[in-house]
Length: 460
Image (cartoon, rainbow, N blue to C red; front, side, top):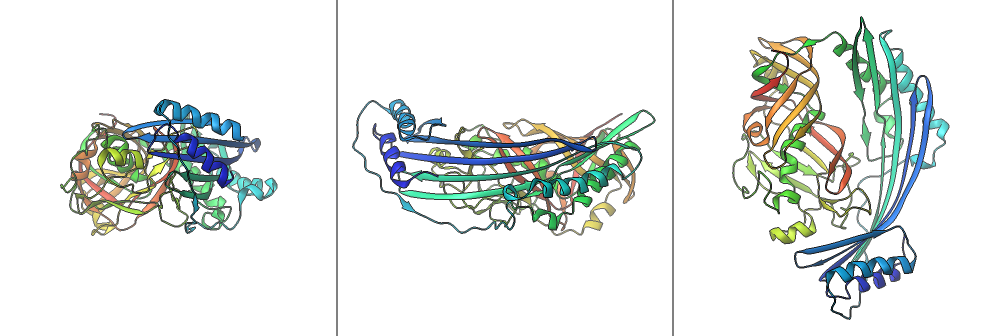
């Protein structure tokens, strides 16, 4: 990482034309992955990202630039580019940085980047061959072990000088089943902000077995019917609907510009009273957790919706200026090459008052969505369309046959009111969220919930 005195000089140069705030973000990241397919190691990839982003504000103007030249000359040139875009006036500035050390809430026991590749490959083989040998119908398996060691350093004109190290490990496994000309796929990809001790929590065999099990269920499933019906959405990655259809609408990235469906609704009831939702970056070792955000603000637990009432947004420093509100520790960026903006960390619907068994028993006819997949959402209207990866029909309160090809169609504002039962088995699922500041790790989550009525896409 860079010397404090050098950073003081670069900040002073950035402020030299009248900026009222300046910031330096130093990024050094190691990305490692090993992939198995066809019964052998197919690829081993190691890469390093290293660079600096410099940003300055003047009122509601923001100017940024980045460089991979970490010499004094390269950094000063980058600072000059930012300063020149702010103004042509000259100002005498002196910066003094004071070091701050924030608590580490995400301890790591085994740093993946320092372990022998043979150890990683053995872990990968355990998942791969368990999936491949699950059933003769499993014709193809792909398994990857990936880890990231993301080290950042942040300095700003308010005197902040701090750093953080974020290590994450994940094992995605996918399986394809084939029989009588029909094919189906299954997947499983747990991850945490921790090292190889991840596999003390998730045995590689269990990861592979779950991917293959899902593929086999879908192989024999009938097509889902279409129409409006009650839908029970299971915990874990089921929370992706809240994340996409509602979470992005609560980020200051869109709220500050007036392009969110949630603008101006603080204090209003926007959901069923059973719904409480949070964004919490302080959960120890969770996939989306951060000790500090990418502006150096400590992470915190933000209650977004409480008993159906909108309580807060997720806010970064610059959009907070526009809104007249303080940062909530949600400024995030993929790397030095992106400007930070407000993003989610671990976003979830909290446990509710209903027993899980009562949720299914309450459904005369509907769909039980065990696992959600990808989809699309319009951030301004909240209109969404999400695939159901694993689903079952429910009749007279009983889970019946497996179905495939189902999708859930609606809008974020509507679904929040239609959630009329909230269970008690909160769990999370891991994903990579793409937005204006790049792709970042986020957790989504919820307990089992019931949506009273929603449009299900399928075969009529």
